[in-house]
Amino acid sequence: MQITYDKFSINLESDRGKREIIEFLREKKFEFTSKDEKRILLRLRSQTRRMGLKSYSELLSSLKTDPKLFESVLQWLEKGRAIHEEDKTFIPLIRRKKTLKDFSTAPSTAKKKKRKPLVVLPPEFESSLNTPTDEKNLTLIYDLLSSRDINYQAYKQNHFLRRLHARMKRVNKNTYKGYYNLLLNSSTEFKLLMDNFSINVTRFFRDHELFMVLGKEIFPRIIDRKNTFRVWSAGCAIGPEPYSIAILLDELRSRTTFLKPYILATDINQGLLQQAIKGIYSDKSLEELDNSKITKYFSPISDSDLYQLSSRIRNMVTFKQHDLRTSPPGRDFDIILCRNVLIYFSRPQSEIFFKQFYSALKPDGYLVLGRCEVLPQSIKHKFEIIDTRNRIYKKKPI
Ligand SMILES: C[S@@+](CC[C@H](N)C(=O)[O-])C[C@H]1O[C@@H](n2cnc3c(N)ncnc32)[C@H](O)[C@@H]1O
Image (cartoon, rainbow, N blue to C red):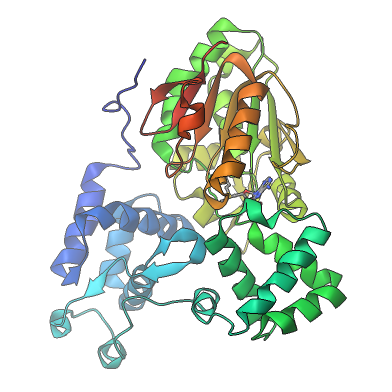
């Protein structure tokens, strides 16, 4: 059965407040695409929260009366969004038009500022452009990894090299030979390189619409037919994904009182798991959550932009270190989420993962992938497509 979406709209706040603040920015001669409007509103919403305000309208009044605040908010919007999230390559969300003299509230210093480049490459990304010249010595690094049982071939080659170059740049090594010598002698550098391969961008309700579909369509189906609820979040990073599942289940509590859900969250990176257990997040991680959920499930940590997730929700998730390249950490899952992890792996390696997910699912269990990930042809026939857009698949019984 396919799912339709019209009923799920992200209503963060009243449409009027949103419209007014967007119109205000346009009136003040700023340019942005209609596609970026939603992102701008999300950023403004974090600003609203940070200032302890309750609505866009209140923020708008402050922006109108406080030029300094206005300038700092604009600079934040100008800083932009990541076009390649994992590499943190930014383009501005908003641009000042040349007719800036019309803009009465901006302080005069802003006019003299040098125009910022449209795309700012952070050092980490630039490093990937400066390929070391001693390419033949790259095999030294490959051999060293193999000798320590690191299956580097599992990763896509451009991902592997980008992360390797980033580390080399960080420790001022321009040649593979120089970096190889360092790796041989420093277990710390070896560990840092390993951690660098795992990219950990994540946030609560990432791809909000997917979580709406899970909460309204998929979870009730699982609840109705079973007396267990077993979830595996594979590659969970610092935890927002499994915790979002726990929040959804908590919201369905009236229907789940008889269930004892088991939410297993795994990642290869122990450091990330330790952070996950603490459950402390910046407001950027909460960008896709509506205010009512933030108030209900998080407590602000004073004098910071941080929030801690309630212990009730934290206690619903079991974290465990696990490498996807080994056998699954459990069986009989009703649903497996492996999102934004497989994109970094080669096709043959991903195919092995899919076979393992298939065997770890119950006969009619669900598999959820990231927005940029698809089932390989070789395994497609084993799953029914439930939702193409949100990448939800259901295991076909054998
Ligand atoms: C981009 S994050 C995805 C987080 C979350 N699933 C989401 O979509 O928001 C990718 C995660 O995969 C983990 N990872 C990478 N290689 C892995 C492996 N071989 N086994 C388990 N986890 C791995 C990384 O440590 C990282 O935390």
